[in-house]
Image (cartoon, rainbow, N blue to C red; front, top):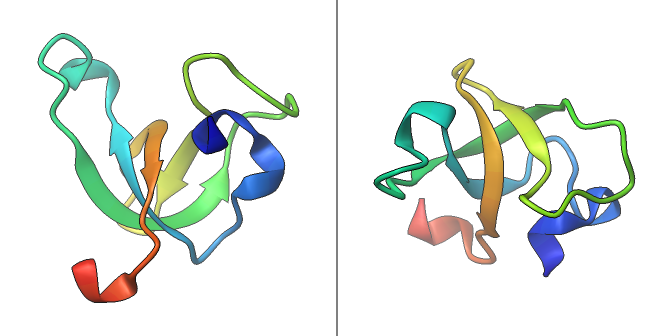
Length: 69
């Protein structure tokens, strides 16, 4: 999956993330990547990122169309 490969992500990209507190419910948070926190080239549960608003979570989905923001 594209959310598991670090090379597919970059600052400024719109994504849906799952925060640690929301793992049980699967609630998604949408935002723009500020920093990529995972240093490994891939991660089975998704790459961990920090959004521009400071929220931290693992990428669940890359948003292709910024109009969906």
